[in-house]
Amino acid sequence: MSTPLCSEGIVKNIEGNSILVEITMKSACASCQAKGVCPSIEMKQEIIKATSVHPEELAVGDRVKITMERSMGGKAVTIGYLLPLFVMVGTLFVAFTLSNNELLSVILALVFTAIYYLIVWLFGKKIDRQFTFYAEKEDSIL
Image (tube, rainbow, N blue to C red; front, top):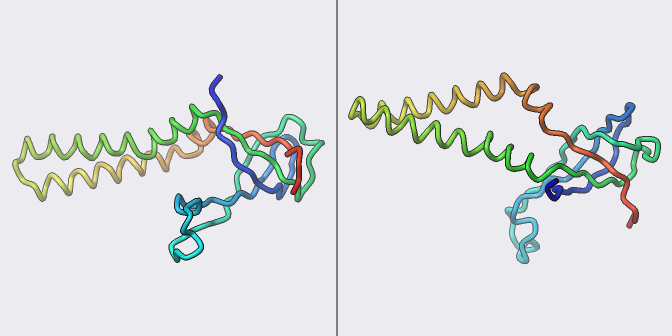
């Protein structure tokens, strides 16, 4: 079993084993030393659905630790970034080899990449079921 990826959040709703948790998504520069003087820091609130083995120990407003298997993070990167990159570059090379027209090749590469993302969006619920987040109560509340 691989090491889990972790985040912290606040419980917003509990329904059986299913828990809605609000987490703060920070941009990469949020951890930068110059964040106090830099105007580009971005943070947004995100609600995610997590599963808890012991939901009876949780209450709305509790701080929880959200975990996901590291392998699922790699899968998300593959679906969201690597496969569309291969689709775009592959289409670009094939189209240029066949047509020798740069503009047509670029347009086809963008169209095929858009079709890829449309397919991912259409199968979103099925893909979503493959990614499971787990919530556990934090031991120490600050």
